[in-house]
Length: 210
Image 1 (spheres, rainbow, N blue to C red):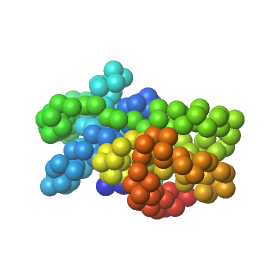
Image 2 (image 1 turned 180 degrees about the horizontal axis):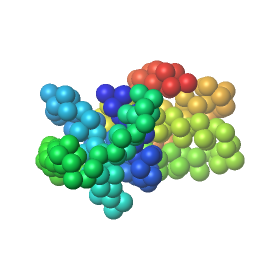
Image 3 (image 1 turned 90 degrees about the vertical axis):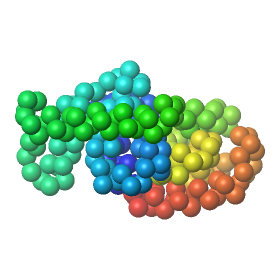
């Protein structure tokens, strides 16, 4: 699941999508697979459809052709081969396009037409201003990186966004040995045990990526 989430994240970067598209696409992916675990055999189609839907939801639409070409480019990079781009009139492209559009409708239906995705980033920025740490550029960049990584976890859509924000700050402060208020959870009325539980998953993911 995390591998698929990384693929979605990388694809949105290659497609030059705004950050909000990445957040939505990952949120749709986690929510859909949690409700439809039997559909993981169609994981690549689901990933493509989540990006298509997220781009529409944020009014920065990417076409099915854009997305298919992007995934082909990623695959060619992984296999160290020259990228191959399908002809828009070819049967293979038309088949993939139809599968993506059908999957997009399935995702919308599965999510109950609720395309809202809670972002932890505005809560993180709120804490930054509250603690007056705007000048600690390296620390803030590490926090931001951890915050983006937290969205790769399926659990990111099952907890309150404030837990992701606090977990990212706490992880960065531990690893860079920078002090932050010990009662940071109280500022957003978050349970400390819930933060610690998520931090264990979050920290393991960050260790794997370091």
